[in-house]
Image (tube, rainbow, N blue to C red; front, side):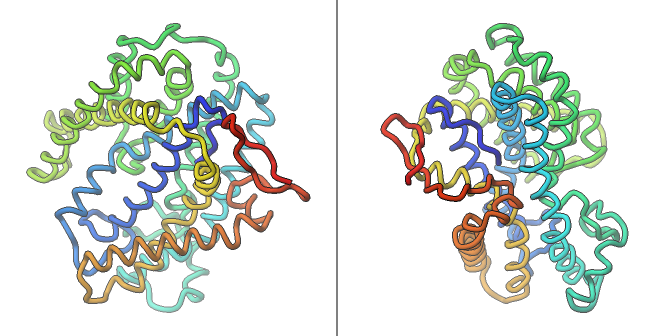
Amino acid sequence: MEKITRSARYVDLDWIKVLATLLVFLYHCSMFFNSFDWHIKNNSIDQTYIEFFSLLLGNWIMPIFFVLSGMATYYALNRRNSKSFIKERFLRLGLPLLLGVFLLSPPQVYIERITNHQFEGSFLEFFPHYFEGLYLEIGGTGNFAFFGHHLWYLLMLLLFSVITLPFFIKTKGIEIGKEFSIRHYLFIPIPLSIAALTVNNVVNLASWGIIFYLFLYVFGFYFFARGSLRPFVRKIGPLAGALSILSTAAYISWVFLYGFPMEISLGWAVFMIIRVLLVWNMIFFILYLGDQYLNVSNQALKYTSEASMPFYVLHQPVIIILGFFIYNLDWPVPVKLIILISAAFLVIMGLYELIIRRVNILRVVFGLKASRPGEGSLVLNNTGTYRRKI
């Protein structure tokens, strides 16, 4: 959810970030209706088109964020020193995380406890219990969501930034392998597969393990941010797209026919490798599509790119709270789906447009830069760069 760059050459990455944020929003709306575990479920479950949509996105949507974050780290360290980098990280990631832990997560845990018949009473009666035990899984007994629920991504990114910074500072000028080649394309999925097969079940976050995400973040820095990648993406993009379709079809067919493998076995290993190949090729295909069709800088990009962090921070609690008011109503699933998506989007964007972006302290708390007194809005020049409108 961070700004990648304002260079016209890389505006496609900002568009990818914005569109991926919107897809995360739609994904979490789908979680209200599908058969997978989530904090609150509709009284009628859909295991057809909504579940298909969830499976379509679930594997690769968070991995693309970690790749983009690794790339953003590379660009950031070329502009600032390690001290200012860490300071910005704690401000832009740490403050929204704390907001999520202490303000946005309590109502989510409360609603989960109420709908699962684990608590009776009002939210004010529940709030003191929020600090009892660590929230480790859906349906568990602990309440304190130290990772901010959906904001675990910010926590992981903050930890990754601190852990990798000494290595990145020493090696940021090194072009590993000089040019990205087919050798990298074939080799990098190997450590990803090892991470998926060996440590994925230790701590599972949005379908993948912490080490898997760390690898993607590091690869984003060392490989995907380098200029030599783009020519390769243009060549491999169509093939990556075809492989993405094939691996997605294999993955979804497997789940619908046999379910998710629960025990470690040869079949489980094959299933996990299919998922890794899906993620890997989807990353290249998305970068290819962005390079081909999203290199357009305009006011819409400026607005949505800045709004993406507050949108991400707010989206899940808003979905869950709105879902709480409709989950037990006897309305058709399509009607509820349309109402949930529309109402949640309007509430989030209303809060951002009318309050958050206009109040400096809220801008900072939601991970944005404060507006300086006397500054006007940003307007787009003919050159594709931005200037201040006085």
